[in-house]
Length: 279
Length: 163
Image 1: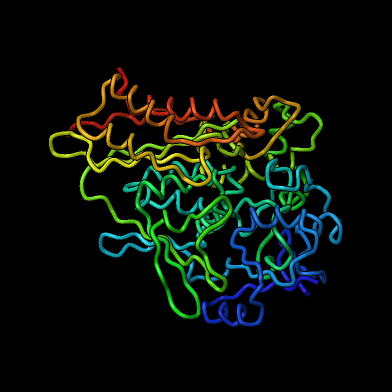
Image 2: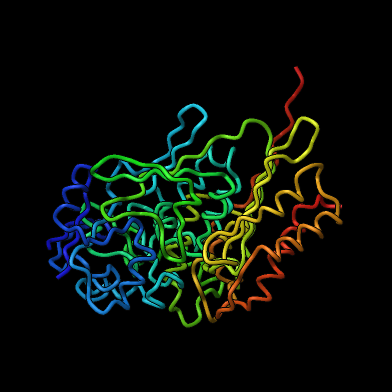
C-alpha cells in the first residue's frame, strides 16, 4: 500500500526523504495524480508539500519578491504586489486550467513538471526568475533557464524541492505582455504562448527586451533575434514583420494532437502583432 | 488510515487507504453520489467540491489530504429546512439543467464565484465556470442561472448637495 506523508516543516521533510529517498513529491497533485492513474505500480511513498508553511506565501524583501513554491497559482495571481509589478506572470498563471485547478496547482509544480507547455515558464523566463532549491544540505539557486533542462526534466536533484522563486522588481516603467493560444479559452494546453517584457526608457524606447515562447520547442524558446529587432523605439509594422520572420526561425515546434508544427510556427509570429499599438 | 474531517458540517471519520481518491471516498465509502466523475483527470469539473471553502477537484485529491479539512459537497448546500439552495432553484428556473451530470459541479463552481465576487457580471461568471464542461446546454442558461443570484445594481447614488 502507498504510504502518504504531509510534512509540516522542512526538518520533517528531510526526515521523510531520508526514510524514502525514492518518495514521489507532490504539491497540488494536478499533474502527478493524473500520471499515477496510468502507472504500472503505485508508488511506495508519496510526499505532499501542501502543509509546509515554509514553502507558501509571497514575501517582499527590498527589490525582490519571493514566491513560495507550494503557493497555489490562484493565490499568486491575486497577490497585489504581483499584479502591480509582474502582470506578465499573472496573465500566464490565470491562463492555466480552470478556477478549481488553479486553487490546487502550484508554481513549484509547474516548474518541476517542466512541460514544454507550462504556462508560467515563458513569463518566468522573461522576468529572469531565480529558482531556489532546498535540500537537507542547504540551498542553491539557478537561473530559470538552467533549471529547465528538457521536456519533463529539470535540474532538480534527488532529495531536493523547489523552495521558492525570486523575482527582481522592475525599476521604472515596463511593457509586459502574455498571450496563450489554445484549442479553447480554459482547461486547454497551450498550442503556443508568448511572454514579453521590455523596460521603457525616459525617451520612450524599449530596452532590455525579453521575448520567450511556450509550446513551440522542447523547453521555453527565448527569441534573442526578436529581442534585438524590437529594441529601440516602439516598433512600426515593418519592424514587427521582421521580428515575425525572426520568431518563425527561432521556434522549433512539433506537430501533435493539438496543432501542426506549421500552425504553431505561424502563430508564434502572429502573436507579435499584439505588440503594435492599436491604430 | 483513519481520516477525520468535517463533511457537510458533520465531523466524519473513515478508514481507508491514504491514496484513495476523494471522489471514490465520497461516492463509494460515504455514499454521496451527487458529486460526479467525468474525466477523472481534472479537465471537466464534474467532481468540483469545496475544501475549506475553496473550489477543488475531488478526482485529483486523495484521502490523506483531508484530515482537519472542511469538505462541502452538493449534498451539503441545502437550506437549513432541507429545501434546495437558491442557486439550485435559479438553475431550475433558468433551464440550466438538461442531463444534469455537470450540474453539481456547476453549482459548486457558481457558489465559490458568488462568494468571491457577489456582484459578478456575465464575463466574470463565464470565467468562474470556465473549468466546468457541459455538453447539453451551450452554457448560456447556466450563466443566466448564476447571474440570477447577483442583485441588480442599486439606484445611482444621489448627487451630493453643495454646502
